[in-house]
Figure 1: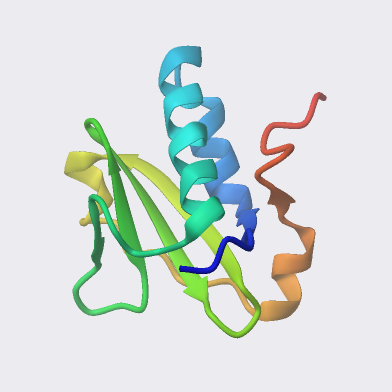
Figure 2 (figure 1 turned 90 degrees about the vertical axis):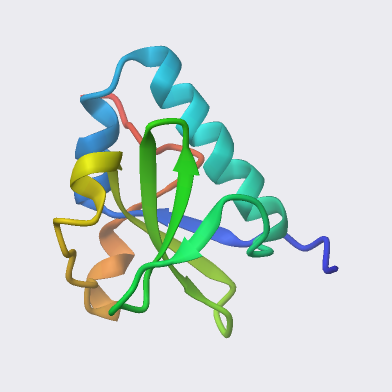
Length: 112
């Protein structure tokens, strides 16, 4: 296993999802995303979303939908949704150039 960290990018939609959560839930989800970035091994409660290139990470009743780019060692969090909505709403991946405007996990919810 490689100990190198992966870069985590939080899409604007996922940031908006995170802002809507209560603080303890948000902290639990961000902690899970950070743990994923430290190893990025697809172990634990991670499954591939059927019919897409996305994965989902289960955090209690919440699902973190993300894409993983092995070449760039980047994880892009695209949505954070409750279990019931996580599979109904198909997200469309951002074009590579638009991902430059996303926030990293170190500052997913910047001050206004």
